[in-house]
Image 1 (cartoon, rainbow, N blue to C red):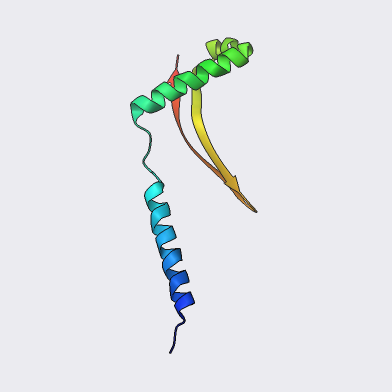
Image 2 (cartoon, rainbow, N blue to C red; image 1 turned 30 degrees about the vertical axis):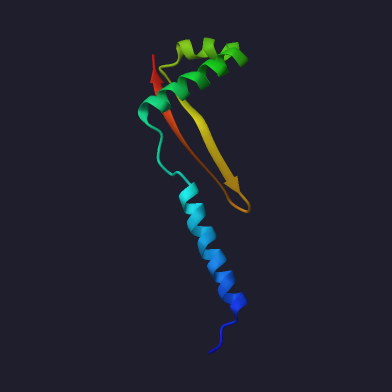
Length: 88
C-alpha cells in the first residue's frame, strides 16, 4: 500500500492544525470575582441604556445577569454563557 507524500503532508497539516487550535482555546470558566465584576458592569450598562430596567429591578426579587453569551448555529442553534443571580 503506497501512500502519497501529499496525503501524508495533508494529514500532518490537519493534525497540527487541530492541536494548535486546542491550545488556543482557553475553556476554563470565569472566576467568581471576574463573573461578579462583569455582571455588575453589564447591569450598569443596561441601567444607563434603559432607565426603566432600573425602575423594574427595584420591584424584582432578583435579577439574573449573563454578561457574556456565545451563540452559534447553522441548521440548529445553541448558546452558552455564565451568569449570576443578584438578589435585592
